[in-house]
Amino acid sequence: MILPRRNWSKLLGSTLVLIAGIVGVSNPQIASSVVVALLGASLMISGALRIGFYLSGSKLSNGWDMFTGLLEILGAFFILSNGGATTGALTALIGVYVIIQGLLGLILGLRARNMKTGRFWWIGVSWGAITIVLGLLIVIFPVATAVGMGLLVGCHMIILGLIGIARYFSESQRHGF
Image 1 (tube, rainbow, N blue to C red):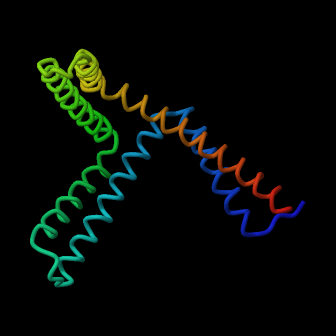
Image 2: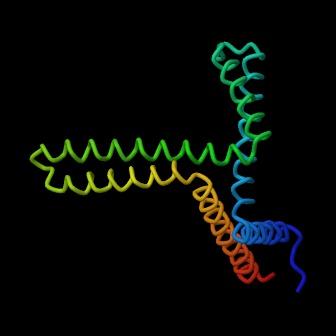
Image 3: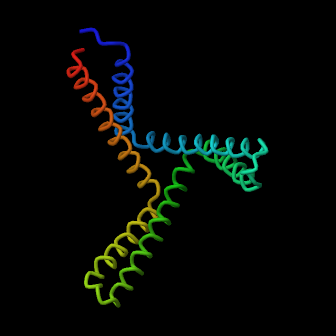
């Protein structure tokens, strides 16, 4: 069965995503490192675009574009040159963010307790407390969390690859290829 050339790219792309997912699951640290590298690359591109926008002389641009562009490029250089250390640091920052979200949930739950319609206030308080504990675990164990995130990224890629391959073959059958 020879398939049209336009469909081979879908099958090839989905197969590569599946293979990358398998590699990510077999070595989650690689997946975490790739996520960090992609973050660095996206910061580099965003910074360059902001600086270019500022230098273009557009009336919509201001000094903040130049400033944030330079910060993004500096951040990108730091991330790309310190990959392993950056993975742990970014994970710790995510942990701090999760703790803040938990505190907000706790506060909102306690506020709801004082309202007439707040009979389920304890759900917000429980969610806030659990989220704070989760955030603390992420901050205390950033490397383990990064490995876990790498595993999740790998699993996600496996699922995306399998879905893409299944869609490719179902479209091929539907169109009579």
